[in-house]
Image (cartoon, rainbow, N blue to C red; front, top):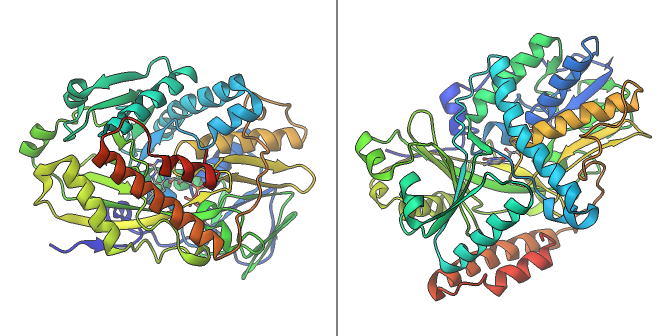
Length: 463
Ligand SMILES: Cc1cc2nc3c(=O)[nH]c(=O)nc-3n(C[C@H](O)[C@H](O)[C@H](O)COP(=O)(O)OP(=O)(O)OC[C@H]3O[C@@H](n4cnc5c(N)ncnc54)[C@H](O)[C@@H]3O)c2cc1C
């Protein structure tokens, strides 16, 4: 059987690619204009409309809702947020604990709201299991576990090899850390359901409508301009395509493969009855889920970045990436050696220069944005959306500061990425360093993180 490559994602192959809604018919006005129909844009429209039902909200989407990472991701709805360590250093430990607590609550918020709105997104709250394979990974796992506990996750559990195998029999796993603050979802079922929900609430969605330029109170498209006091950029990995934003956030690739549904005898051998989302502690880490129809979907970085901040062509990924992900899958579960890959795809995530997610409303211009989630945006987008709602309420005099508007990632500023070819060279050097470090840690069996990875982290500004 040959592997389908691209077609946006396997999740869309399963659910059907939608016929886009009508594009913007011409110049118009709104109270809020949201650019981008992914989780960030749609959740923002949702919470604003719920808070103030008479608001005229327009969402402008270049292709169709869920065309981006929200329709392609690994379906880890979990409590990780990019940049927490840096926010702790800048704002103090307690501020970062509040941010973490907000993320823990966000997982519950998404699950509850999806259920309340009748969105069936194959949600399974099995938590997140991250496994270690080498002594260096085990040392990192233990350190990671302690840090997470220090940030308030008292319910996190640390397992040895035997307890890990009782959950999932990942070959060679020497330990793992499990948190209950995570759920497996079907990404497209969530984003499609969300788009339908906001539309039913009275939000206008125009698809096939790319925004080419954003100015204070203006979103410019080839079909007309939307004028609104608040214009919100929710374009994550595609941000570089907007005039003046080439170096704002770097579009980082992530790729996935999925198997056919596996037979029961294979599941008997693997375990994974709790359907935890599954990851590892490699520097070039992977993330996986057991789908509702009993496949394994697994993703990782592959070729990390395309020169000039280009994005993929409708989700097509490189064969070398498909082969590399398959190799990891078989290393984790050797009995899958003969299992074909049904579908492969890729997408882009947004990476700021300091690798810190942020949510911002510039009160002088009415321009807002949220993103830079790196690889942890499924839940974070929801927290960002509720925060944008509160910031707009506050700015328009309908509310004061809230628990969300005072979180340390709000209104965070960061410098732009370097021009090419430095961007390309830097990112490729970073991931080459990670792969080297992973190989060396696997062969030397030393219990310390390889210094190549430590150096790469420091030089890249990642930690
Ligand atoms: C392969 C992959 C796996 C991932 N796995 C996970 C995971 O398991 N867990 C996790 O937490 N995170 C994961 N992520 C990240 C997560 O999916 C994203 O952070 C999240 O979906 C971001 O949502 P968003 O709405 O901000 O961006 P997007 O979903 O990318 O939405 C942006 C939208 O804006 C539209 N757009 C862009 N430019 C314009 C324009 N100029 N005009 C109009 N519209 C525009 C796009 O078409 C797109 O629909 C993954 C990402 C990828 C690519």
